Image 1 (cartoon, rainbow, N blue to C red):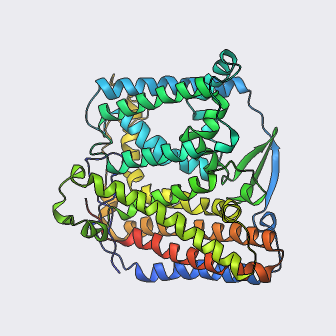
Image 2 (cartoon, rainbow, N blue to C red):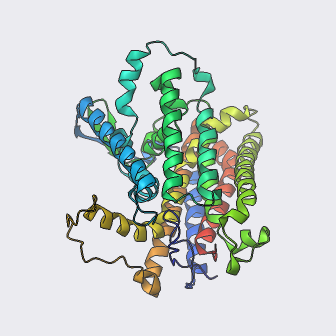
Image 3 (cartoon, helix red, strand yellow):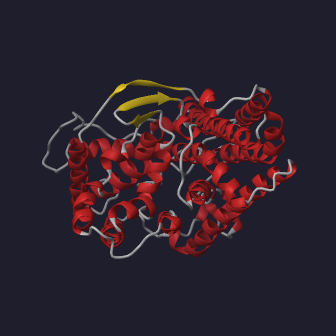
Length: 455
């Protein structure tokens, strides 16, 4: 099976590296990846009964305390930087590969920050541009003007995530600086209005989808604070130790995965052929707005429906009779490692190129001729996409991330099933449909990496 290779398209800062022109023999690698996940499932089902805490160990590494004032200061600085980025989007260069807002938002924030948040530590606790305003707004409005009950959960964040995904995938020019500045400005107004009307704590926990997204990915990070102490463990260990979820979080998690999967699928020749578009003569994003929006909605509905069928079928195999919402609340969070893996694998080629543009921009952030990083004579290169060996390393790195994410998800799902059904035998039978889902989704993820892409 041949693969697409990353040849960046200079027109879109957040989507470069998604057209592929070289070929690699990816079939054997895909087979090994799928077999690895299948083998991990078999090994877990036949191991002695263990909790996720045992399968994903963690340990205390010491006391680390940062004054809340430092986080608030960092948050305020990020808010001011965001305001500066909006000004740059409205008044600066229209070249997305030179404009600070486009590079800062799509590359540094949207591509890179979730990777750090999900695999390392709570970066959002320092970068959130809203944190600094929470206390003043909470003081000014001691009682929220409007209620946002806990039982509403994060459904507002689900709606905003879908809206943002539609903008990312279907808007004709999401990386146009002025257009992006307008969208971010509108979102800032909505956020501050929501914090004022519903209370900052409620709004940030239930409606502001970047905060919800980062909070979920943060549950996978290897480092986490427990009071003044920091613990370190395998990715996902926090989920393995029990986490309370607001209503809607399971669907939010599945939408993260569904959106990430469709983001990759909607660039493939298969999708373009399905909607009647010649991938070698792509008419432009404005010509496929409606099919992309319908495809995004359909992909998420299909994923949620299929996942529900798998977990309910497994429960019925052992005569459980548990309600679907309880099963969804228990098993959907185990999909988080896959969603994060898809994010990293999908954006890795783009980050390798666009990250260079970010470094060049940081070398002279104010356009004064500064040479802060010593990159004055540096030219952005895509030469590593032209060599078979470097492309092999890139593709295998993407594949390894996807396989690793599925293995962590398998461990979490196994531990959840054992906890729910009481013993390995019942957990094995109840987990069979979900295991099939995991294996097939591994194949899908690797196929999306290997499939020819256009557009």
